[in-house]
Every structure is written in C-alpha cells, then in structure tokens.
Image 1 (tube, one colour):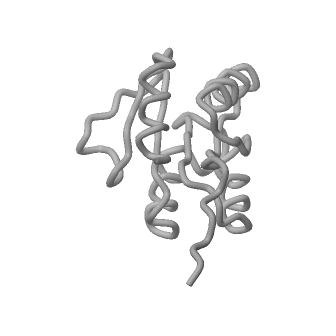
Image 2: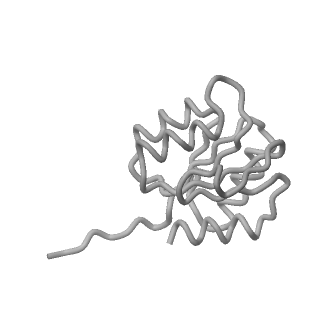
Length: 125
C-alpha cells in the first residue's frame, strides 16, 4: 500500500487584470515558495480551474472588468471547487467577515506581503 507523493509545492492561481498588480502578486507567491498560474479575468480563472486539479489557493482581486468580478468568482469556486482556499483583495472595497465566502480571507490593497504570505502558507500546508 504505497502512498502518493505530495506535490513538490502547492499551486496558487493569481487572478488580476492589472499587469503591474499581477506581476507583484506573482512575485509574492513565488517568493513564498509556491508555483503560480496566472489569469487576467474571472472567466480565464474558471477555464484554468476546469482543466487543472492541482490548484490549492485562488488569490483574486475583486475589481475586474467583465461580468464576473472577484466576489462572483469566489462564489463559483466555493460552489464548484469547495476544497480550494480563497484570498480576496481589493483597493476599492472593504469587506467584513460576513461578506466573505466560507474560509475566505480579505486583504485591502496595498496589502502587506508578510500577511498574505502567512495566509498562503496556512492554506497550502
């Protein structure tokens, strides 16, 4: 009875439409020691989630163009992929714990890198 080897590191999906913010978020996740997959919209994020089984955490901005913002994306993830953890960020909105999906955490932009890193480490362990 052999056990499957765990993946070398957890995979984090970063969803951000602003190129500079995306670059900074990807750098934060990579510096924390995780593999990163990038999406520039909620629709792209859903397509990625439909095709990958290794994503453990979604790190998403709320404010994105198109019909699906980060909150709708978070609700979709909680409904379709319940084990995936959620880190939600925004520079425009301030969320209270009651506004978040189950097990979701919220950070205001500009977020503190060490706080987000601790959340990633907690979720991905």
